[in-house]
Length: 88
Image (cartoon, rainbow, N blue to C red; front, side):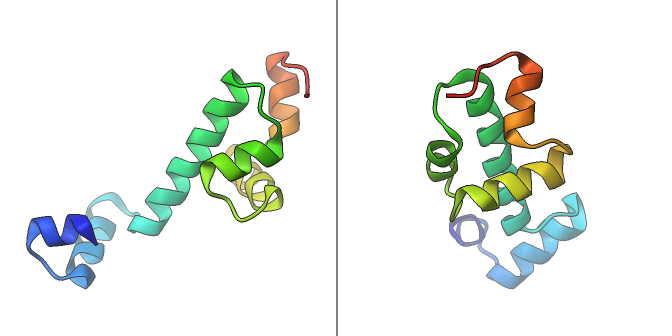
């Protein structure tokens, strides 16, 4: 909403412009950013899945796990194991 206001265009038009030009609406973009932040935290922090889900704005760890699997085709736990990071 803030970006639409700064651009001086109605919110609906702003959504349409984004979707037409980058094939994602703002909600999809925010969700992708949440998943990427979770991926970085899985790689770099000792936080457990519940803490990462909370830190990234997911409603529950299950939403993080299912979204992560859908996006990256691996569970967060398996991803950490693949990286050689011990589960906390």
